[in-house]
Length: 176
Image (cartoon, rainbow, N blue to C red; front, side, top):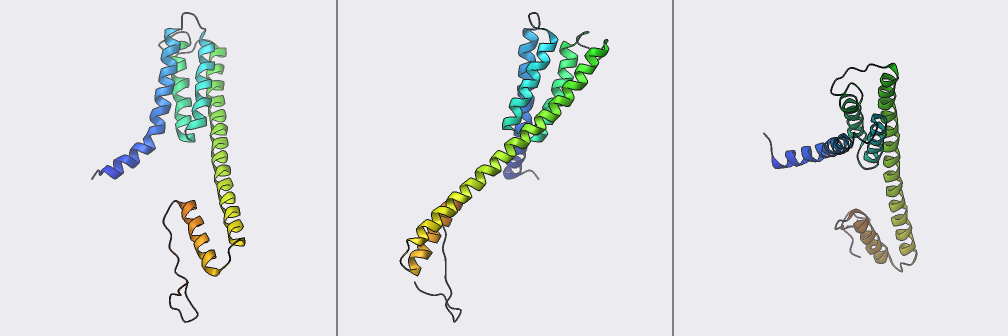
């Protein structure tokens, strides 16, 4: 049975694919309108540029779908003979193959770079939080100050309300 939570989770997973699809369709549509003044090779560059931009904001899977869709649309809409999947010249066939390979590799590398950047930001945030915690603990004057400082910093780091219950030597909750 479909629940609202399942639909929201599914929607969040599908959203990057929808963004990729819409972006490639939009770029292709604009290029189709301008096809009388731009060459089909330039259209390939616009589509490739769109894939690299998408890779900066969405994940690897949607970028791979965008690469496949753009190669398909570029072949069908722009490479002579237009509106067919037949490619007459070997150089055009080679361009489509190379376009797809470059889009896959470039999109994958850009998505990896984005993932590493996000991991670096997380590590930086964690290191800053740890430094702040240690700095405040150094200035604490009692065990209670250490507990309160730790609870405050952990709560800020995880954006949650935190409670600590220290246990004394008899296993009972100690009072600070």
